[in-house]
Each structure stands twice: as C-alpha cells, then as structure tokens.
Length: 330
Ligand code: UFG
Image (cartoon, rainbow, N blue to C red; front, side, top):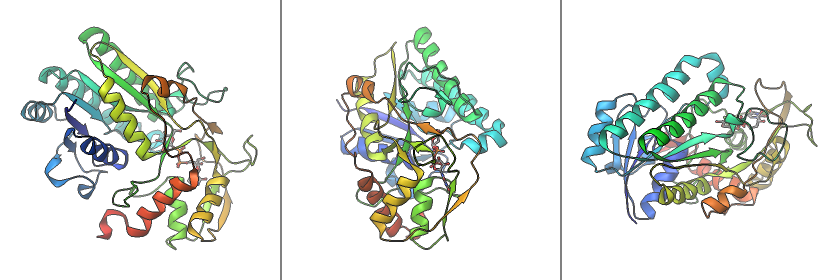
C-alpha cells in the first residue's frame, strides 16, 4: 500500500536512487537533506526540504506536517579513512544526530525505519562469504558508529515498539539506467568513479592500492551491488516493516570482484586504455568482502537484477559521460 515516507539524506548517491524508486512505486516521498554532500538536482524539487538531521524540532514538524508513516535514513558519513582522521564528526553525525532522528520519530508517532548499514560493521572476518551471523567487529570508527546505531534500533524496537530494517550494503555501484542521476562525490575516493574519470581523461591513471593481498590476483576483492538493486531492496523492506520487530540483512550479489577485474571491465566498457600504476596498500582495507546474499532473498523476496558487472559499469559510464563534472555539468 502507498505510504508517506521521509527520506533523510535522500539527495545523496544511494538515497536519490531510492527516492526515485519509491516515487515510481507510488509512494509519497519527502526528502530531508542538508545538502552537505547531497545534490539539489538529484531529487524532484517539490519533494526537497533542506534541513539538518540534528535539528529534532524541524524533523518533528516535517513528520507531522507530511503525515509521515516511515523513515529511510541515508544521512550518515561514509568514508573509512576520514573516520579514522576525524572520528568526532562520525560520532556526532552517525550516532548523536541519528539518535535525534529516532527521538523525533517517537515524538511524532512514527515507528518504522529503514537504515543504511554497512559491511564495515563486520570488520575483517576470516570467513568469506559473510553471513548475517558473522560476528560484527568493526576495525574503524565509521563501521563502529554504524554498529552503535544498529544496536540503538534493536533497543528502541524492544522498548518502544520500533519496526526496523538494517540493510548492510556491500559496495554500491552503478547509476540509474537513464543516466540522469548517479555518483557525485567531491573529492571522489571510490574505485569505479575514479576509473571512469581516467577514461574521461580527467585523471592520468588509476592507482591500485596494493597487489600483495592473499587473493588470486593480489588485489582486494569486493562485492559490487548495483544502486538500483539497493533501491528495490529498500522498497521491499519498507513494505515489510513491523512495529516491535527488526530485520538485519546483507545487500550484496554474492559475487566477488578484484580491483584488477574492475579496471579490466571498465576498459571493455569504455574502450579506453585506463593506465594503472601500483601503489601502497590503503590503511583499513580488508582483503576480501563478499556477501552471503541468501537471507535477503528469503526475507525481502528480493533478487539483484544486475548480475553482470559490465552492465553495472555501463550504467555508471552513461552517467559520467553525460555529467563529466557531476551535477554541476548542467
Ligand atoms: N581502490 C584502489 N584505488 C583507488 C580507489 C580504491 O585500488 O583509487 C581499491 C580499494 O583499495 C578497495 C577497492 O578499490 O580495495 C574498493 O574501494 P572503494 O573505496 O571504492 O570502496 P571500499 O570497499 O573501500 O568502501 C566501501 C564503502 C564504504 C564501506 C566499505 C566497507 O564505500 O562506505 O565499502 O568496507 F565502509
């Protein structure tokens, strides 16, 4: 059934794809974003309210005014390296402000939430693929702040009847097939957009962060899940939220891809040479993170549609070609 949904952080990369997916499914969407990382152009103008997650009063007012029935929370900081350098902003935004959001929901009588959690809550597990039962033992402040909020959700659920879904993303990739919305971070630190910036001639080369890992080609392995598949998983989770209970599920494809394989796939898709140079390991990079993706299929009745990495990179390429400098390209 149709719901009034507040999407906090809805103008960011993953949030904007979820916004579009929910609107296409007939939900009424209100986006709440401070535009610190989000982009005004990424969401329908009439849906956007510019506001801050830490502003409980504003959140309560918006929830009441728009008769909000459920919340999606995409408004966390998400860079591992930055969280090590400056943990204060991670605790402040990902924990303190996020708890303000939960309390705003209680005040406004909203008891359903879908939360963007992360594979970083698992740290460096010995056993691959990673199932939801894998011990959560984060190795950086970013992963720890996400884990703290997962625990807050469970505690609020038990005590106050909150219904929640904690969706643990693996590596989000790709863009809306229309090429109209996509990934636009400044500065960019993610592998696929950087590789495509090389293909566009905006960078000289891609630096591979280490090829001495215990993997077949020596480079790190990740599970790249298409942002459109993340969006449909949110839609599915929304429809299954039950007050007083929660689900915690991985969102991945179950397929691992190395850094070298990503670069090669990007060469195939773009037809560019994409020169590479070998660099040092980046601190905090686990050698391999691949999801056991079976639970999501059962609990959410969801299957990733993008199983071919070339197709995923193709959608990202479409976005980058039409928006060579991101949203400011227009
Ligand atoms: N990489 C390079 N060169 C680059 C950029 C990245 O070799 O210029 C490598 C990284 O070392 C890593 C892989 O490409 O092995 C993917 O790196 P990304 O930065 O694209 O993604 P991460 O796996 O580091 O990060 C993602 C999310 C985080 C989340 C993390 C969990 O972006 O929010 O997964 O491990 F915390």
